[in-house]
Length: 176
Image 1 (cartoon, one colour):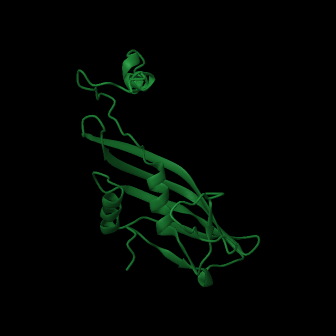
Image 2 (cartoon, rainbow, N blue to C red; image 1 turned 30 degrees about the vertical axis):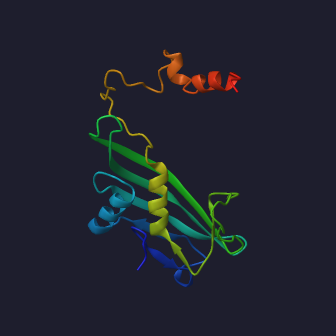
Image 3 (spheres, rainbow, N blue to C red; image 1 turned 135 degrees about the vertical axis):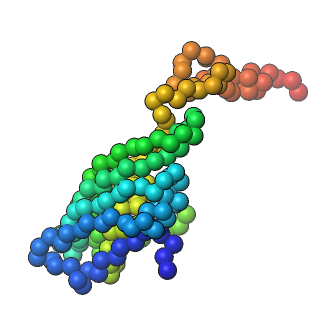
């Protein structure tokens, strides 16, 4: 069993190379709960991936579609629920000439090109596209920072924006 929260593998041998192959994924309640847990959402998301998989030049396959979702995350200020609607295009090119990354840190030349195996996992694409589309710092419109807290967007306090100024002063002294 896979550790991914949602998978939907499509065998290449069952895809038609002559016409577009439709993809329409809406995870069930259990899968939505696993996705919520994996992505640190406060409620299971309403998520859907629609599109097509078509044969592409050089023995490649192209998945193009649209991810639509409604997610709920905790506000970074108040921890109150914040709902966000997502509508993002999705595009992945699966090439037999792309190799999987090796090592801990790898620079990928193109984030849309994936290595081609015997299957294309449209469910993993759904989860990855959702993770990339989530707001990194969800915040309610009426959320305000408590008194005394500094807002990183506030440019009024120069000392708050330069936390290492004291360190620079210490390093400038020559007390041997």
